[in-house]
Length: 134
Figure 1 (cartoon, rainbow, N blue to C red):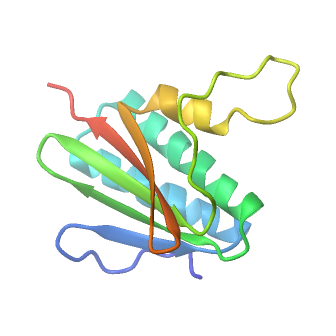
Figure 2 (figure 1 turned 135 degrees about the vertical axis):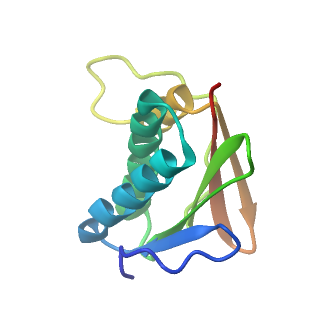
């Protein structure tokens, strides 16, 4: 894996990741694309945190790494985090403050306008959507 963005095709930027050293590049791509798309500063920060949470989950819970895809459609910016992990159960309740783990998806769902999870051809895709304001 690389952690360095691949060439954008059809307006879709992608980056593969496989270890913790790739995380800064993945975060940088998410931040740069969100800024270029014109999301508000708090949305840029929120998307960057959400992507970081999902990628970190991939790195902690799978062996194969994953891929981030990011694109816009005119009104919304979308990110897909694709990995070989199990389908994510959404609608998570935020764990108690004393809990050691389990906040990642709950945080992601609170930061993004929409979060969906599906499986396809042996992969799990978590799609994030941020609606561009005003």
